[in-house]
Image 1 (tube, rainbow, N blue to C red):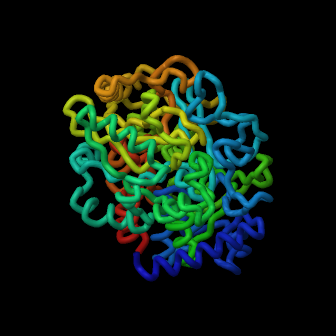
Image 2: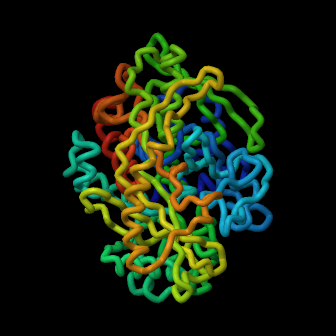
Image 3: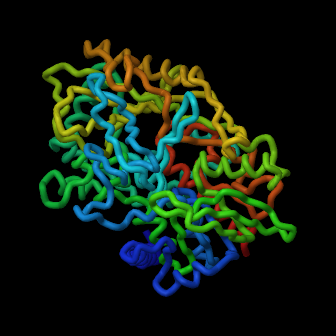
Length: 537
């Protein structure tokens, strides 16, 4: 990591802390916030603060271009009376979910009882579950987007699969330049293998490894943006617990290198980037002079609309994620505000082949009452010629012995959904049928049937609110909708609209074969480098 990146990150982190302490929704370096709040036209606007958006803002700011980021969630940087910023998974409160009255955890039940969910007050919480009939999608809400709520698994896809899904992108450049750049910027680190073999917090992973090895399968350590040295000290009792205190899906209070601590902090540290939180972009129009006009709704944490603004820009970057960016363009096309958008807008959406399942272990194979919320091991069966699978060995951090092994399998599912505009709700609706998830179940079943057969174990049928062993009606990894080379050119420029760009997971056609955030980050690094050189000089 370069000295300039580290210095900017330090300055930006201070700006985030100052904004949080003052309760501000406009975040920039000291002395700049009031001026930024008054500005109605910006040289560059970035919608969202997730991976692609954060990369883009940093590179724009580093190039000296005044940039505003518009984030619909809030800044998570202010402790409550108990000293925590985020609520725990075992006792969630209103901070956990985005304007819901009850939490919606991925494990719907345990022994067929809904033990994971709680009634909560409606609030601008950190995790949203967006429902579309047969599919629901988990997304992060807040400054940092999905980096606040994911499992931190920083995995680079198999090169052969990358060249298959994005054949027109130079793989030599990606693997030689942009993946290493992304890993450095994200703060990716690796677990100490010796510590892994003896620690209590990964006993659950070692049990799953033994079961996989008995079936002749290979496991692999997974890089992470959770600080493994911090985790080691958590287990030793030297620092406050976070990953070892069942914190994951509703945010981590310590140890996690989320974007607000890396790329976003460095972007603010340039002095050219401002973040406006609790700002939701509703509409995009192109003006006669070629600039873009945004209609933006500002809310408070209780959901009341406090202002509606119009913000103009010459260069507009969509980084609101697969759902958010796609909805903005589908709405703009079908309401006639960006009428030249083509039919490819809204196409190519996929779940990254996600399917969750659990196994029941033998009574002597205890997973332990202490389970790290951050996975560190996966079963790598991606080279299977018919049923490639990469399966995260996921925790069940319930604080008690469960004898349960949980997995999030990532499969090669060719099925794709698409978005259409619903005028009644003024929203984009995902068209996805539950039958389209069947290839994912078939692949996961083929793999875990082998494990169960070799170990004489069975599936868990009590985890998903009914008696199904496989849950494929939600995804953590939404991808596609504005696919690179189809809805955009090969660098994310939206076809037909100069100055309009896509910079997030909607560029990737439905699948990466692994957790996708490093690929989203690396692709954004590649694209903004070209855009800066050719469009903003």
